[in-house]
Amino acid sequence: MRNDSATASAVLALTGGPANITHVTHCLTRLRLTVTDPAAVDEGALRALPGVLGVIGAGSASLQVVLGPGVVGEVTAEVERQLAAAHAGGVRAGAGAVEAGNGTKAPPATPTPEKAGSPAPEKGPVAAALRRVANVFVPLIPALIGCGIIAGVNGLLTNAGWLPGLTPALAAIASGFMALIAVFVGYQTAKEFGGTPILGGAVAAVVVYPGVAKVTAFGVHLSPGQGGVLGALAAALLATRIEKWCRGRLPGALDVLLTPTVTVLVAGLATLYGLMYAAGAVATAIGTGANWLLTTTGAFAGLLLGGLFLPLVMLGLHQALIPIHTTLIEQQGYTVLLPLLAMAGAGQVGGALAVYVRLRHDTTLRTTIRSALPAGLLGVGEPLIYGVSLPLGRPFVTACVGGAAGGAFVGFFAMLGEKVGATAIGPSGWALFPLLTGNQGPAPALAIYAGGLLTAYATGFAATLAFGFPRGTAPAPAERTSAS
Image 1 (tube, rainbow, N blue to C red):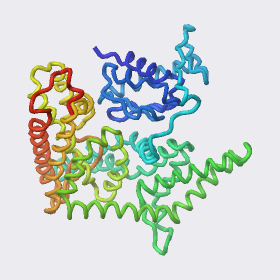
Image 2 (image 1 turned 90 degrees about the vertical axis):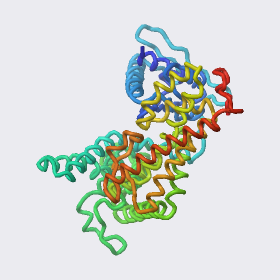
Image 3 (image 1 turned 60 degrees about the vertical axis):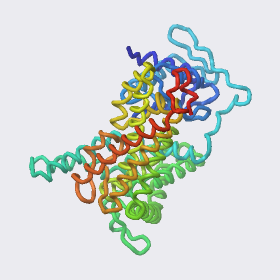
Image 4 (image 1 turned 45 degrees about the vertical axis):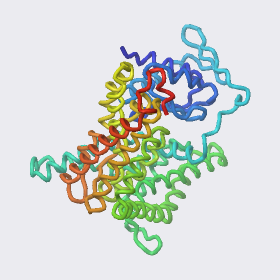
C-alpha cells in the first residue's frame, strides 16, 4: 500500500535533509527540488526508493524526482509539510542537522571534499536557463489544461448549436485566463528570478492593458497583447534586475517608496517603447516559422520532432517548449507542435507492448508495464521511460522510431493543408483528444491525430520486436540493464 508520508521522509533524508532544500515544486509527474549542496544527494539510494521512477539533475542544484501522475502531488504536499515542521522545530543553519520536536537530530549530510562549501554549478548554462524558464511556466499548466478543455467543449457545443445560453459563459471562463496570462507569467518570472512577484506582474500587465493602443512606438500604434508571454517574460526579467539594483543602493526609508516606483516606471517604459515591439516580432517569427516548417517539410519535421522528444522528456528539458506552445496558442488559437510531439509517447506505448509480448517469463517487468500502460496511453511517459524502455536500452531507441513514424504521419497531412493543433498544453496521448482542432475544423484533426497514434503504436511495436533485443533472443531478467 502506498505511503506518501514515508516516501516524502525518505526523499528528504536522501537529499541531504530539510536544511539542504531551498525550494520545492512539482509538475505533472516530477517532484522538483532546489538543493544547497548537490553532493549531499544520494542518487543511487534515491533511485532505489519504491515508487521513484527516475532521478534527473543529480550533481546539480536542481533535482527532479520522477514519481508519476497523481502520486507526485501527494508526495510534494508531504515534503512541504515535513519541511515546514522541521524548520519550525529548528533547522540549524549551516550545520545541516534538523532538531525535531522530540529533541532528536538527523545527522548532517557530509559533502565530499572537492565540493564542500559551495553548491555544484548547473550542467551547462543552456540547461540552467531552460530549467528556469520551465519553472516559470510549469505552475501555469493546470490552468492551461482546464481552460483548454472548457474551450474545446464550448467549441463543440457552438458548432452543434446546443445550449446557446451557456456557450457565452463557457467562452468567458475559457478565455479569461489566456487574456491575462501575461500577468501570471510576469508574477512567476519575478518569483523565479528573485524579484518581488507582484512587481513583475504589475509590469507585465502593461502588455495586455487596452490603453497601450494609444501608445506609438517605432512609428506605429501598439496593440494590446503585442509580444504576448514573451514580452511579459522580458518585462518581468527587466523589472527584477532594476529592483535588485535599487535595493542595493537606496537606504531603507527611501527603498520602500522609490524602489517599486522606479521599477514599475523604468521597466514599464522599456516595455512600451522596446520590449513589446521586439517580443511581438519574435512571436510573429515563431508563428511564421512553425507554419512554414509544417507546410514545406511537414513529414520530415514531424519525424524529427516525434523521434527526438523522448530524450527531451528523459532530460527534463521538454517544459522549456511551453513558451513556444503558448505563443502559438495566443496567435493561432492552437499549437501545431504538441500533436507531433505527442507521438513520442505513443511510440513508447507500442514498444512497451512489444516488450510485454516478448518477455513472457519476466513477471516483474510485465507487472510494471501493466501498471504504467494506462498513464502511457494518456500521454504520461515517465513511468514507461524509467520503468521499462530506458533500463532495457534498445527499446528506448525503437520507441523513438515509433514516435518518429507517428510524427511523420501527422506532418504529412500538414503538407497537404490539414493542420492538427491543440488548444492547450499539458495532456497528450488519448487525453489530448478533447483539445484538438485545426485549420479545417476538429473532425479532420481528430482523424489525423488518431491515425498518427495508431502509426506510432504499430511502428514502435514492430521496431521493438525486430530490433529491441540483442541477438534475436529475449534477455533474462537479470540482464535487462545491459541489453543495449
